Image (cartoon, rainbow, N blue to C red; front, side, top):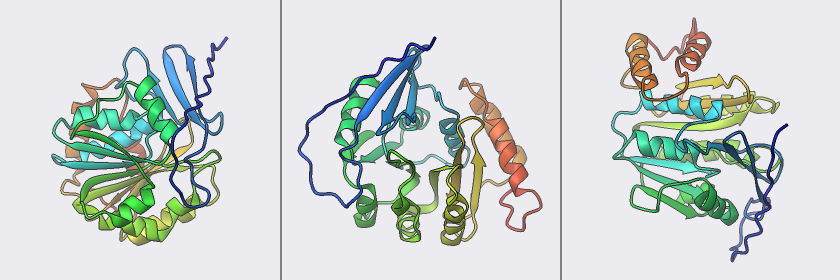
Length: 271
């Protein structure tokens, strides 16, 4: 029997005005079962999970897919995350890229407080920083460049439309370095997902990969500002094998899925 412990987090904070339909007032809940602590924002859907005995492990398969970005990044300096959750992928990249700065923009103050208290995130520093703000406005007004922008902003019933529109994708691309990567988490069950991917392809000149997770139904999209420096399949597979010696999950299965979607395509990114 699942031992589910639900904790309602009623955190009071001063709220600044946000656009209509924002997420700064959604309730943050938690559950625990079999050494795994999960965060729920506004609904029973799991937004993020952490293995309590191994806080830097990527517990959910869709976050494991996100780790594939590492094989395309060459000594990144600045990583930007839109949406905090339990900071699973932030912690992974913070540890994997020991010299990179990890900045997260999160609009919900309760999510920030819960992540700090219960999800064992690193202490605030130059390398690991969280800012409470509207992710879309922050990117639009930023002048900084990032080697990776990861968009993982969800509300209680799915992905907000505003995070799936061409102006947002264009703003993200404008903030990428020459070889930067934009990555976004989409829901496979959303009938609009195909249209969202088409918009990303349009924005990023078709330099786009995507793969569906095995269990959760999430679809992770990788969009490249320009063709990756390394496109040789044999070299990328060697990088994955090297990574797998240090992590406790399978990356090759997802890379092989990506290769299948690229096979016989005129815009195949791989050699």
